[in-house]
Amino acid sequence: MPRRLHRAVVVAASLAAACQGGRRGPPPERFVPRDASAVLVVPEAGRAARELADLHATVAGFPGAAELAGGRGTLAAQLGFDPLDAEALADAGLDPRRGAAVATIEPKDAAARGSTSSARPEAARSVLLVLPVGDAPKIEALLVRLARDRLGATERSAETRGEVSVVVLRAPGSPAPALAWAIVQHTAVLCAGAGGPAAVAAAAALAPDASLADAAPWKAARAALGPDASAIQWVPRGSPLLARLWPFRDGVAVGLSAAAGRLTARAAMLLGDREPSFRALAADGAAAKLVSRLDPAAQLAARFDGDPATLGKKLVPILPAAERARLAAKGVDVERDVFGALAPGAAVSLSLSPRLDLAGLGVDALRADPLRAFEFEALLPVRDPAAAEATSAKIAAAARGKRADGAWRIRTPSGEIAWRVDADERRVAAAGGRAGRLDALLARVEGGGWRAPTEAAGGALAGGLGGAILDPARLVAAVRALPEEAFGTGPSGFVMRSLVDRLVDPVSRLAAVSFRADLAEGALVLALEIEARRGQP
Image (cartoon, rainbow, N blue to C red; front, side, top):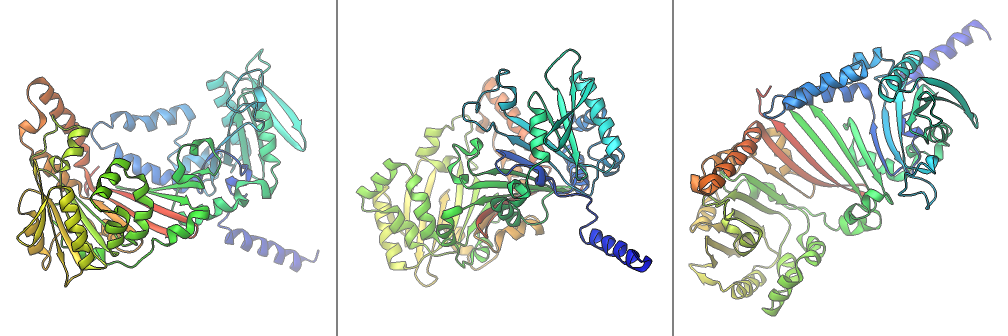
């Protein structure tokens, strides 16, 4: 080859490598079968290590986290390197620029599923680990040392399975493999246990179109989560883990990312043939504006900008049949008269009741009178004010309420639920709790009210289907303001107070907890973000 052409080929190869972010091998899911029952994928080991280190430093400063603070050192001592240090990963032979994965592989034949009997060692469930290799000799030395120290496996052999050469380590005198691995395409594929050699060989020889990397549901979930996740837990359709979780029947991916003082979790719930019904939820409400009119002291504020009628079709069937029947006897169809009457843009706030009695609060008591625990405010746009008035009359009659001072009112043992239909604004203003809460809400509608505790949390109040924000500082203040009798008397009251204090102290270190729901292509995306207070160690 002429020298100039050779040089051009080298330069082109270098540019191609640079365009791929310096990767020296495929992503970890390339060696994971698409039918794995659960997979944890770390797209970039170095970034995940940095984010986990930041998160560990934040959480370790919380009360009761002393064991966690020392856990990093203990793990580092066992591995021989700090897994939360990108440089240490590289020194151990790993490539921090690339990803890793852990996959659970179910047995292929039905007779073996659910059995881990040693009579069928290669048919049992296996756990596959995929690691990015930066320095193969270092990786092999690490695996040999860990197998010796943790498994007592010191006898080494090589097995050829198909076109794959698998390294196998056994404990002296044992015929069963303790650990097996193979290194292919700058990637280490390893598996412990008797079925390890077969699992490793199958993964190393996996055809591209049979791998998770080429699976359409996985690609859809990754796209829905966005590029920021540093670790992704994937559970596909058909996994035993989803057997009783019908909302996630089409598969779910949960992505985590972290920074100093912040943890974000996003769940992408694949919708499959349910997507049209979820697309019907999309609407264009103005709940963010209404949230700002709610109680400024409320601990939780939420909004829903989607279509309430579509939401009702999903929620009403899961309401208790007895409650639906009781309302129906009074002429109230919950789906038609309640959800169907509302327009997009609902805003609600919740607060702890200042008369909360923790000692006497139980499920039955809370069901009979929820105002014993919570107070609320709500601003609910309606499609037809006249229809809303008619429904209000039916609901009040069903609950033995009445109309007074231009509002509908239902008395409870600990307060009242009151609401008023505003025909001009085409909305319902409602409040529950101490008498006078509705009047306070109506007086505040034209003025200022609730505000998000942080700028980042405020993002949950705009766009998408809806969102909610918890203000930990207001919650802690409300709990600490409760009178002593709220916790009971005698020794049980002392214990209750101590338990609450142990929960309140960590919560006081938080600045905001926010939730948001959005629709992505083929998925419903639910995001949760937790922010620590500034100055939190």
